[in-house]
Length: 246
Image (cartoon, rainbow, N blue to C red; front, side, top):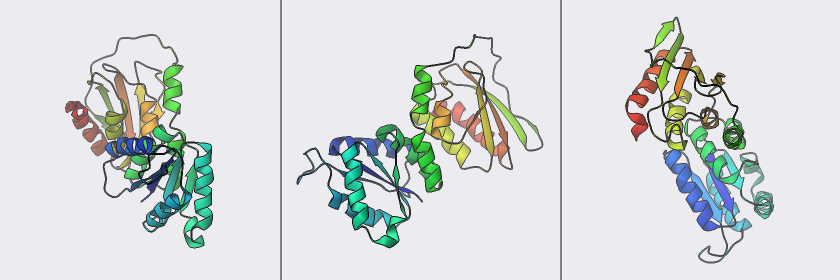
């Protein structure tokens, strides 16, 4: 299991980011630690290499650690802590160039399904892709979309069409639930937003789901292939029927 360390100049920022990440990936198996602020109550702005070292010593006992940092001197403090860390543990620590808040959320969701530290970091570093795409959308002409259909299959190849029911669309929390279903099954999934780009999007983590830009009423065509394709689509249909828990 990959654990996460958030190094920030602001204790409040780091704690709020950790709380948000834990909501997206509520699992006791993942440790999300904070090393942020300076002073007795962590109220002053700054980073403390000794505190970072203490957190790394604790987290590396449990496995790999992905470290996300907010500003340049946070990186310097983390590198100083690495220099003081026992050499046998340094290979378990991986510094990420991901954006602090978005990266932490993406990393937590990916780590929650037991992905490797490289996969977790890759997802974290892609965390701004969905925002970039939303700010510069590709226009596509609106076309009539048929009502959702039930699962169809041929061998291990399955397709499901759904409409997004919740008012906020596939925002972060429902997107994380959607992602978890896919990633915990032995399946490859591509999703096409028939009201969006109409380009099949391979689902590899939270960011690829967010990049669908799925809003309320948008129709998604979900194509699944693999031994657990049918189970995956059935679980997705149940999630939609329950309005993504909202």
